[in-house]
Length: 223
Image 1: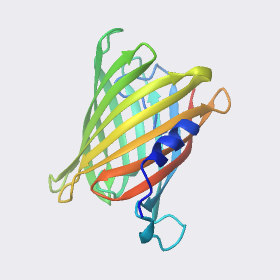
Image 2 (image 1 turned 45 degrees about the vertical axis):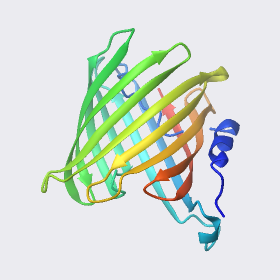
Image 3 (image 1 turned 30 degrees about the vertical axis):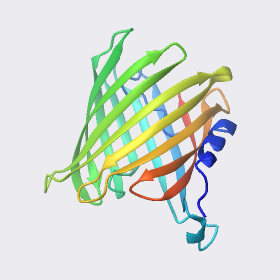
Image 4 (image 1 turned 120 degrees about the vertical axis):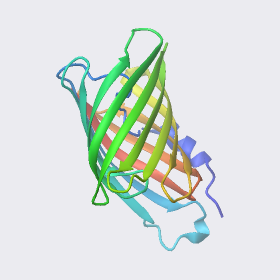
């Protein structure tokens, strides 16, 4: 018996997301963004459950720092497109940063995935809306030894809610080298706890590539 995808919508409307990253919008000089989260997963088919404990889980840490008005530096720890552990440092520069219209930024990261050195180029697009934003963030994780590459594209719709809350709906897609492509739906709400710290709680639902649903719990801070 499958748990209906309405689970994902319900958890989003009641509570709180994935990383609220700057993407195509650079961090202002001297400004910092930090997030940390745990992600828990269960089979969509409840008949496959052996216990109520998660079938898998992993932790993430993400940070950005505005070194200048144009240059954003970052650290990304957690899980790669292929599902292996990752540690990546990156730098992001805007290619088009006008106040109106489409924003474009490019980034380049260096790091290690599953003990192998990788190069991670990326491109972000962003469009500000009256009460929110749309964004597309793509990246490739390229092995510096073999040249094998994993690719990922996330599409996000963000909505600013009253009392400094935010709702996010995201389509996460990826093409790991030598594995099946995947697509999952994720949504969440960000709730401020203090002037500097916000809580996040959200859910994910696999559409292709796997058959799990997940819960995201974490905190983020911008200062």
